[in-house]
Image (cartoon, rainbow, N blue to C red; front, side, top):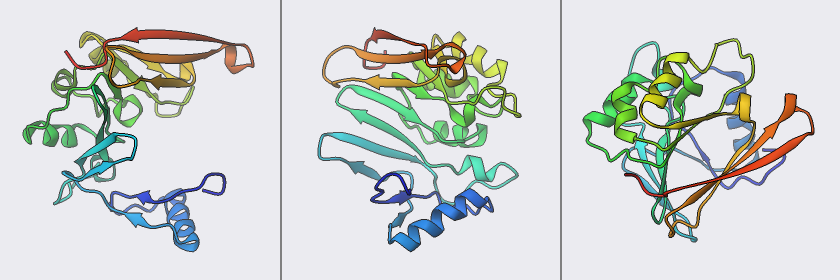
Length: 208
């Protein structure tokens, strides 16, 4: 928040003791940045036509040991025909809630939940999303072993092409939302050195 201008912070409202989380909230309050709490059913729209439809968290919050993850903010980003799903760190319990609520989860691109953890991306949920591309944000050689091989297998079996930031580095998606294609810009780093090459891929923008 010291480097970029922040208009608002969206917070799930789930109780959490993490230092970075509380530092963020303290900085927001000190700087007068509003903290908002979107809930399932809320819709945000930008002036240029992007819509965020929130599908989580819902009240009452999901309980249990994984509550901090299952009550993540989750939303569908839509721009004309293009749809991308973000589920934060939501696990299987949250995915089951989304499915039970009959939400249209279909999306051309899935930001894979919880860094590809074995406790998210259940087969039924992935089948409902049916993504063409699945992007896993994960650090190299992380202590949690993310992404889980079972999660990658589930995504691939569903027909998704998987990209991982630990292997492919930065992934940028561009779409005009109106045509039948989107473009994935992949920045491959050789050993994460300065040697880079770009690849561009096109695919139909809307879900099957």
